[in-house]
Length: 148
Image (cartoon, rainbow, N blue to C red; front, side, top):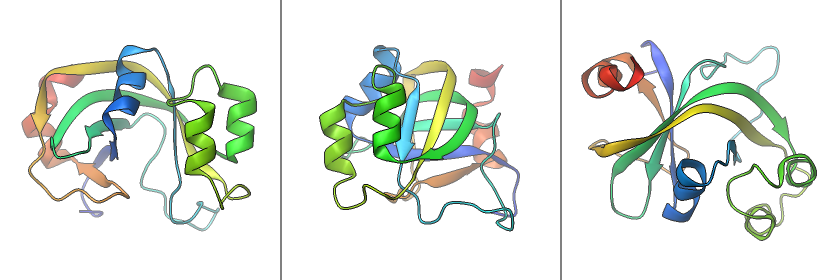
């Protein structure tokens, strides 16, 4: 899939975090990823692409869509200090999520144009905890009308 035209990333989230983003005006998304990109890293996810919000827990549905305005990397404490009122989840959630990784940086996405999808789109492909890239073929079939 990496060779195809990438439209964004699908990250799975529990329902309480999808609701924070979609219903509570929280526009800071964070996630630990394998490695933080460097100048030599080929980057597939860039600003202007989309975050496809996938509700985990057996529903297998993409419930929301947002534009990625900015991508940056910060520690959990930096996120709490700067964005505690705009981040998904609460401080306790982020501290629990980062336990044992306090010095490791998370990928942080500043989101804009957040939309709840009604009805949600069933995602039939396998979803791992690390997420998946959304390619243009799947996007064109299922999301073309949402992005216009």
